[in-house]
Length: 499
Image (cartoon, rainbow, N blue to C red; front, side, top):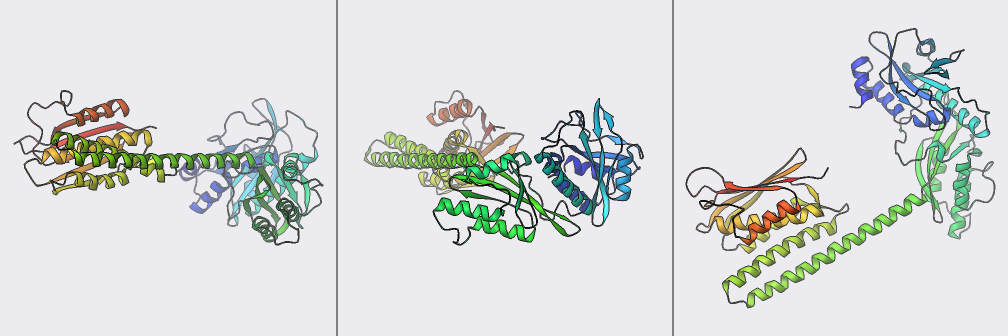
């Protein structure tokens, strides 16, 4: 649960629906704070009758009124009278005289938060009066829109059932602001809002024109078409949202410029008061996205080519092995084929990956039949996987797959030299940032006096080098249980995972 949910459940009697309403309000109230040039504090009545601050947001358009975060502050009933009156009366109450806090003069206001017909909380709208401003046209437009939105909060129509936009990359007040009347004509455009349309090619004034028609004309001009042609889908969605007075977010493009928009309808007592449209020029961001996508495609293509080249190398080694008459040379080439093929499996997986990570479970499931084919002289030995290795980066996946290949091959070839049947089990678990893989067999076990450090086996030397040098991990080979020589072997591999 979030801090807000914790405070509401521990300190109040508000139900889940009311708590969800407040969560939705807090998730999208940065817009309210920016338009109001004020800190917003969310207050609720506790079980013992006090007022408790459970939320605090500062404006990005004005100095803060509260340098110290107010969440958790408790106030006895009656101490902040405007908040108590707003909770009781259910409207917006402004205190006559400024309050002082931390040496800052504050104009306080209480705004009732209504849900399902009852007041469940109150917003404290605290404006910093320390830096007096002469109201500009933009400030007046912001404050007017803020007033309409606060009225919707007191009526219970904000936040809307459709939800707000908590996307950190979505349009914000400072990115671009338009105020539309009930006929969807632009009555005010902030400098940044106007700049977005200028970049799309608008040369005339935006104020006094119908928004959807402006967008349609710009797109048609860039496409070399006539304005009378059928509307683009993006403009049709905007027009539909405006006509239905429903919130909407989306993007539309004219030429090489892409603009994200958010439509916030304004209403009072079910009567439309136009809407606010927030804009953000996303052109640079979209160009970076395309560059990243192109880079990802190139990387996947490289993995695909590496996989093909490795498979070619494996095929050449396999052909050379068939020409060898010396058993030791043939065996060495077969082991090389197995090692190269295991690396090719990793690159095959990475070639299909969208995020540069390798699915170790899928690789291992493909690796097991390959080990069984190489060890055809042991058809009765079964290899099973229990648990999930998950996804790893290419830097970890490649050495890990090589290690697992060596260990599985050793288990099948050397653990069952005198038997035709057996079982090798691979178990894996991720705990506290570490991946632990166990490979257990019921074969003949390790020879007396075995030491991994002293072993002259090329495969085990490769395993030890990869684990300790490439993966910064550890490996341990032991008998599965005390007893006769037929006790089996267990290899335990532990690898730290990147945070």
